[in-house]
Amino acid sequence: MVSSSTAGTSTIVILDFGAQYTQLIARRIREFNVFSVVLPCTASLEKVRELQPMGIVLSGGPSSVYDADAPKADPAGRGLGLPVLGICYGMQFVAHHLGGRVEPAEKREYGDAIATIAPQHRLLEGLPRDLQVWMSHGDSVMELPPGFTVAAESHNAIASIADESRSMYAVQWHPEVAHSRQGTELLKNFVLGVCQAKPDWTPETFISSTVERIRAQVGEGHAICGLSGGVDSAVAAVLVAKAIGDRLTCIFVNNGVLRKDEFTQVQRNMREKLGLKVVAVDASKRFLSQLGGITDPETKRKIIGREFITVFDDEAAKILKAQEAAGDVAHDASGAEVAWLVQGTLYPDVIESSSVKGPSQTIKSHHNVGGLPENMKLKLIEPLRDLFKDEVRRVGADLGMPQEVLDRQPFPGPGLAVRIVGEVTPERVAILQNADEIVVAEIKKAGLYRSIWQSFAVLLPVKSVGVMGDQRTYAYTCAIRAVHSDDGMTADWVPLPYEVLRTISSRIVNEVRGINRVVYDITSKPPGTIEWE
Ligand code: XMP
Image (cartoon, rainbow, N blue to C red; front, side, top):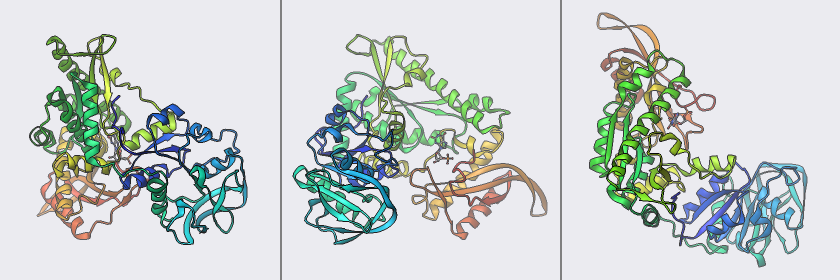
């Protein structure tokens, strides 16, 4: 599998003990242009060594070191001779496994606390003596492991320990969360000071090393990529195209539930603005006929997923068979024919699956590509595996991709089908496309498009009575949804300015035949979800 390259860049490995803030640690470190990668705490020593890290961070976690199934970390236990920073559970882990004593605290510390620090330690250099920190722990370090001294104390507990000679440090608080003052300085002291990592993780180095690596791995082979029209698959495709040129073929499927004119617009963007080779397949009739009569949300999603795989398989098989017929295929060491599948998987997706299910790099994508020649293997290229969404946008900008592609709000795979409550019919799709176009245009006009995670219209199968001119109307209701979110996992509804809501409502009712009432969705997630289905 081809992921982004870390060769030659300073790397910090974060071993995840299951805290909800682990990704935030990675985030913070990468904000100072140092590459950091989260591995499950069960990662083997070899796996960690492979990355040639300059330091290791042990994350927090929900366990107690005395739990029967308390998570353990191989490299931390045996030591790689690298600088180590333990955070929260990470501190207790260090203390417990290096010969100290950890016990349930008399008083749990949760929330804001003051840590009084001994500033002579490199980790805490430049920080105020009384530091406001954010704690969340039940166990405390009661006895230090040999070689360690107390580096900070809170009212209730030892708050930080250090062994300068081995460059091992631990803090009981969470420097990565915003409530901990100067947490960024602390992490910087560790990463740039103690570990001596170089801030060399930039979009340019990422692009050049990734392109080089893809080129080396794919060689004379071919790759295919499913485009969604969204940012991730587009950036992934452009990166791969930069490496192997027109040996990359992209497939873009019209599933009948795209936004208005999206099928032609995306093709134009991808071909003309991004220079990609795109095979566009209009399968809208097939999708819409399968969706006929279906009202259950999950069934709709399943139908779209199933049809997509079938259409993608067929197209991929055609492309690869044509290449095979032309004798234009690469072979692996065993002589089997190899082609590559590009996916725009992002870092948060990887973390989620690797922490919970253990690291898995095996791809099942070839199962999806049923019509491929028997002896053809599909290998996965995921060039964005190590990136967060905003980093993907930075890379895209550095690749010269147009802002209109990079700024696009996320759009779900099942498209407008999950925004049409009840049955999806061609008539309803057209009504929603028209309403959606107005919402997007007005949100953009108000200068809000980039700051909002998603803003869209939903078509409800609820008809009500209205009056237009002297005419009675009896038509559908449209709900407007706009949410702020960082990752789609949680979301807050946006208090859109009344003027914007007024314009959206009046334009929809006046311009979209089939809708005579507009309502605004003021539900956050949880308990709601972002999409209605
Ligand atoms: P929900 O509705 O679960 O959505 O709060 C969270 C985020 O995920 C997007 N979403 C999807 N994206 N395929 C996708 O690629 C899907 O099936 C899908 N369902 C929801 C949704 O738009 C929101 O950003």
